[in-house]
Structure formats: C-alpha cells, structure tokens
Amino acid sequence: MQLTGIDLVFWAAGFLAHAVLLVVLWTRHRATVFPFFTTLITEYVVRTITLYFIVHYGTKHQYLLAYLSLGTVDLVLQLCVVYELASHIFRPLGKWAPDVRGSFGWLIGGSILIASALTWLTAPPANSWMRAVIIRGNFFSSVLMSELFVGMIALSATVGLPWKTHVARISQGLGLYSIIGILTEAGHSYLGMDHHARISANLSYIRISSYLACQVYWIIMLWREAPASLELPEEMREQLAALQRRVEYDLRELRSWRP
Image 1 (tube, one colour):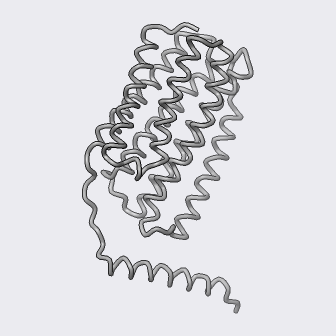
Image 2 (cartoon, rainbow, N blue to C red):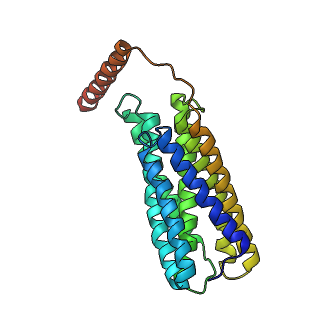
C-alpha cells in the first residue's frame, strides 16, 4: 500500500495532535476526571502507530482487518465516553435522577434502532465484504454518536448545563465531528471506497480535517481552566440529597398504592 504526501501529512498531524492532547490531559489533571475519554485518545495513538506499520509492512487485507477490529474498539470506547459525559451532567450529587436516567436509556435504545435501520438501508458499492462492513460500520458509528450527542445536549438543557465546562467542550467536539462524519460516510456509502477514488479521498480528507480541528479545540479548551462553578454549601447539598431520597420514597408509595 502506498501513501501520498498529503496522506503522510494528515497521519503525522493526527498523531502529533493526539500526543499533545494526552500531555494536556495528564499535566492538567483531566485524565482522572475523564478516564474513558483519555483511554479513547490513547487508543487513537496506538491505532495510528499500528495502521502506519501495517501500511508499510503488511498487506491490504491485513490493513482492512486491523482497521475493522480497531474500529469496533473505537465504537465501544465512544459509547463509554458518552456515558461518562452524561454521568457528569446528570449525576451531580453522585446519583442519577430517576426521570433523567429513564430518558437517557430511551435515548440510547432509540438511537441504536434508528442508526441500525439507516445503516441497513445503505448499499455501499464495494469489491469485498470487508470493505462493505467498514463503510457501514463507519456510517453506523457516525449516526449513532450524532444522535446520542444531540439528544444528550437536549436533555442537558433541562438541567441548565453551563456551556463553558470541560464536559460541554468535549461533547461539542465529538458531536460536531460525528455530524460531519454522517455526511462524509454517506458519500462513501454512495460512491464506495474503490470507485471515484479522487472523490472518495477528498471525503476522507474532509473528515480528517474536521477531526484535526476538534483536536486543536480540545487541546486549547482542556488546557484552560473551566469557569468556576457556584458550589453549594455542604448543608444545602445534604438537604437536596435528603429531598431526593424523600421524593423517591413518595413515588414508590404512590405507585404501590391501590384505590
């Protein structure tokens, strides 16, 4: 497999940006706050190195197999990041609010169903089953992540999430990249990865460029300190926790009551 000059530039830029982002996460003590996000970025570094060496010393089949396997790991970690960000937003007192947790569960289930249906409807032109799986997998991942982040942002509006927190910055970057990914992967689903090679390459460059922009955004925003949040007095926090427990108890009593 041969890489063009612009391919090498994108690979080097992506690797460097991920390395800098990891340094920021650890030196600014964000890694312990966002362990799944840190793991995802670390996996991207390992993925870049692995695929680079396979391109130079492996076969095309080995590259596609590694790309597909690592893509599956990516999707699992992205779902973990979604849960991690949601827990920061909807579990400020260390416990999920019952109504929000139920809504979040419906959001995940509905998003998976819609993403699966849209992916099933695609018929990407490909000369091998592995390429077809990669195209459909990328499309499914982009649609699912877009739905989850848009839905999570809508749910977070109900709790008044400040949009300058680190949680919000990570969500904004991943959400925007996922939406752009839908457009580029829809193009691949229509054109395939073999036909119209120049157009297919340009779509990939658009997707990679948008992700590089997200990386730079995360580096800047995670380096900065988030605006200081208004901390509740400890007494008020205890009162809110007690009130939440009382409301949950009353709800159970009402549901078990029979006229």
